[in-house]
Length: 591
Image (cartoon, one colour):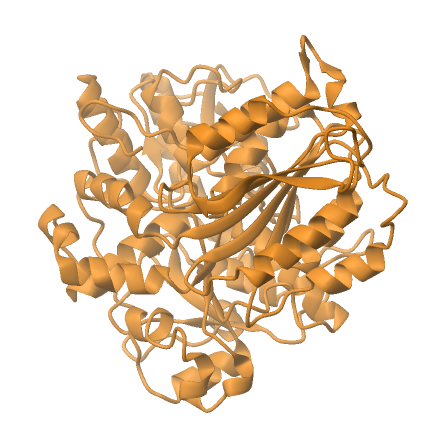
């Protein structure tokens, strides 16, 4: 749901990763604990940062705390940094910062001013004093780009300047044949879900701007224009699947590249993301590393940042001083903001692939990601927050639809207790929350699986709801009525479900299998993992992806991860059952 005058968007959590000294921050939020600098400053400044730069901000805050700087009025300040993704922080600030487990911030450092606009909209709707009424200075910048493997980017550039629609929407079904490379297959691309990710949100807005052929003043009337709707729908139709974390996507791509494989994202011709991630990928920051290494090997095939001719969006990383700051904290915030924009600190941002606080790219960055267009980049002006809200409301109906076959483990171990409920009850509740996020135009089927039982004597799996028009009540009713017993027939079920999706493949939809299990394969009649991995291996012409949730500590997450990666899907670690709701939300947001 989008924020409006009467309701608040339920910003969904997602896993984010950040490389700063190659520290990874994962989860809906992380509190970053810092070393104490040893001084006794009376003023404490709590800073909350978006996750992609939080580890760097921790280092810079420590550097600040060790310095001999003084703030206006005398004395010094201690800066402490916590981390929360920008969408989740927007929700927390709009609801009093409760239930985060993090200190109340006086300074907020989201990824983009898009979020300050959304918070302003939520405050207006609630009749509260505005927390983000102004425009704010940047501490770093990173434009949105279309990242493509170098050979594909170079071929595309030979056509001259191309727009968002020509790159992401024109080729579609004809694919690379229109560029003289039929062996490269269809043209599909990856993007983050705009409800989860700043880059996904910016990519969606950029698509609308390209549709209206303007760089500013997008209106709600524009969103309702049938020609605009058709343009956006055509681009969304070429999405391979919606990622909850483009960093994970790039890590998988780097791993496959260095292993000499075709790549777990081989069905994608491009990924829409922020420029800084292209640099991190190309410099080995997202590659597998040996112990003690700061970075891994550089990929064999680098990515190139392609800039659409209409322009792009800039993620401006604003420095926001919140009303919760008192006078001393405001003075400390002003000094910390000045500190972050000074040379040594800006060099630290540059080493992570950011442009400086005035939007300038270093020569090293451009050498890594590719040159800018002659004359530099054109940037879209952010729309009014009300337009962004309406856009996200409409995106739910315009996004690419899915064929989803859900396979739910009903083996006897699902009767084990998690607190006062059984594993099956916890999993069923999580599945219900995830199903509520699907589009009514999706097609959904439901299977149950275990070894043969009295209720299912002839097969380790059973079709509970045929793949077809999504009927949420029917699916939930079937889940509630399932019998739980037997062993875990994981391989046989995944194999059969994959065959079913291949047979019923729809090129106009995301075709995916969702497997939820609390165990490992216990079915002696089918115990051949190598054959299963070969059978589910991604066919770029007819991609069927397997997404797995490893539920409870008895789950064989390593094997589920192998199965998912073979198909270019993803495995979600919910071996702590408390995380299953979050895992299901992330998974469903891929469709």
